[in-house]
Amino acid sequence: MLILFIITMGRSGQTSWARKFGLYIEQDTYHASPMKIKKRIEKAKKEGKKFYGEVSHFHLKMIPELKKAFPDAFFIHNVRNGKDVVTSWHYMKRLWIPHVWLGLDKIIKGFNEMSRFEKICWMWRHWNEKADKEIPTRIRLEDFEHLLNHENKDSPIKSIMKHNELWTKEQEETFERVCGDLHKKYGYNKRHSYGIR
Image 1 (tube, rainbow, N blue to C red):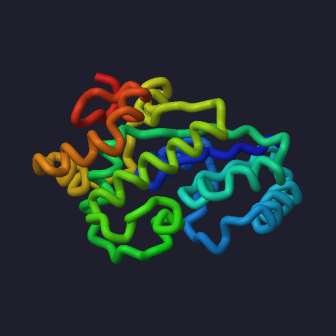
Image 2: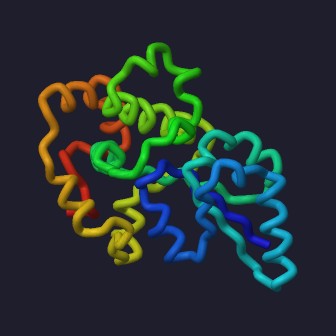
């Protein structure tokens, strides 16, 4: 059976990948473990499926464990324009739960004292850097959608409208300080990037 893991930040196209390839979206940190994934794979095998894939924000924290448990699986690091991701997280209205940070308070010095905006910037940088180091294959969400001629229907219109709200000068400077070099490395030089334009 072909096994695929798309390693990506939240708000970076999980739904787009899942819709296109029928991937399982893991949305519960308590279910994101090699043992539970193996059970899902065994179930898929019994159903006669030749392919199984998952995409999850929570997989970022367990890349080495996944690679060890599934040595023959394919791993792809999916990245989305950092400014879009940070804006999307920042304007979400749902309750902010601590496990979303994936333990960054124990990894980055002074994390708990940062503003929510700066925490999100560090979240984008840290976990993309981690995936970048451990997974050789990377694709930008915008390129994925362009190649497949597939619109991103992941975000409702009101969410995209929120993305048009201007950042403050302080927010722009914070993003540049925390994420600027990695953002440029990935080829993002514009304020927003919904697809290739």
